[in-house]
Image (cartoon, rainbow, N blue to C red):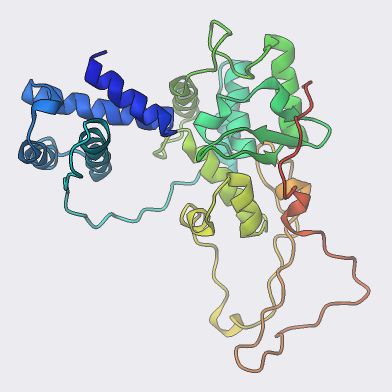
Length: 342
């Protein structure tokens, strides 16, 4: 590692940059040095800007890759080298808005059935059953399984945030069978040496291999299981705020962007009373035929009339059972350490 690379990496580290962000920034600067065959601190701002144009015009790299390079170069020259704030730019394109490809319940079931080992099945089942990012599932510890509260604890997920997510009875059963066979000590899914967590690329390989054996041709990697988790909960009647908290999103708009649009109400019924969720909501795979937190879809609140403020539709039955609390009883504060045994 050169002195300049080490300086930049240390600057990124002390500013709390995530490991993958540091790797992306350092890789972008390394490509710049290889292109000119000179050290980056010997390049002029015009040369750096010309390289950005080369990335778009000649290499035809994705706009997201070019954007990462812009931020990496700004950090290098302004923060690490202490030069005046550079003005490297790339024209902002009109990014195509694409919805994620969603696996159906049957496809998730087939995917899990076509894993070749118990460990592969447990990794994919946990990713889907708890709605985790691949970086989160590989860093789970055995003590993060709280069998008493039926919760799975995610520590320092994306954005350095902790959260609780679902642990269904079927997922707990799957993890117990996996633990009896492999007996992991610290990391739930360790690397081969047992001392480090599994590399995210290994989990991706598990997914692609199972998808190929199952004959699933839909595009996308292991993150498709997280999208399927959220979509299947939505289709089972779970409210958006609960899904947002389970996914660990700080903004509800992020959750809505990752979900496909649901079926629209008929035009003549657009102002009618809220439509109840599926009576027999069947979340696939590991959810055991229930919505979030083991509860079926809940009816929505009556919508107010747009002018008179009078709720459209029937008034609530005073003799009906009380509505369960919002967010399925998820805690508002971080709990203590999770139960240690699987």
